[in-house]
Length: 266
Image 1 (cartoon, rainbow, N blue to C red):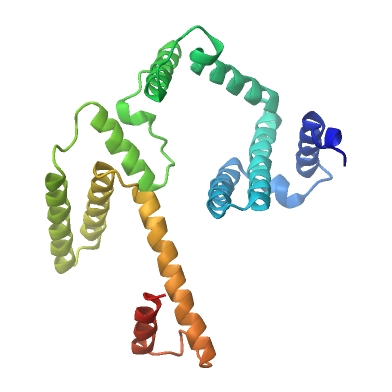
Image 2 (cartoon, rainbow, N blue to C red):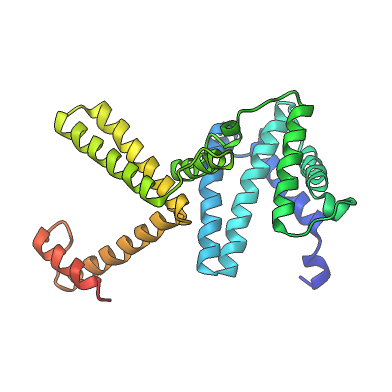
């Protein structure tokens, strides 16, 4: 394939549309024809996270592959909408193009901005105007996507509340709230009430996310970092046990604890 052919964006996009149409057609794939929008939506979220993983690892080939997987599921959802007469993929592309032009008046209009902060302020104002034109008056937290992962959603909710002054003043106050929620969780555990343990666990997690945001730390990234650290250290345990002809299931807790401590120095 020469350079000109590789840049045939329209042709490549058309082939992908035809492929998805074929898969969903009468002579296509029974499994693909049976999929629901909700199911594809769940796959879409997973693919989006794999894109993020590829970015984190710096793999260009991996990023290309994962973007393809993500695009496939977007096209798949659009095809399902076309089948039920809701809209077509061209409507999707037209709508997002118009929206981005509307939300970048400093690029496509005569608005002047001084910095990124001005751009973000304009963006928020334009979004509010769009809601008003649609006759929608959303609450402040209604603008947070309902399907966001819990940690990210907690961060976004508290950040929006902070924008209108509903926030702690000092880090010490947030720490006190975390300690208060931990004490309530301990009490719930002692009482043995599962429903209350669940509620208090959520309260504690929420307060920790709020503390993370308040101190300028991303809770999602922090937990991902700890997950990766746990995975590395546990992999060390497995590797060392394998060299001894054992598995974690056949090893004692004392053996695994020793190897865990050993992994901290690596």
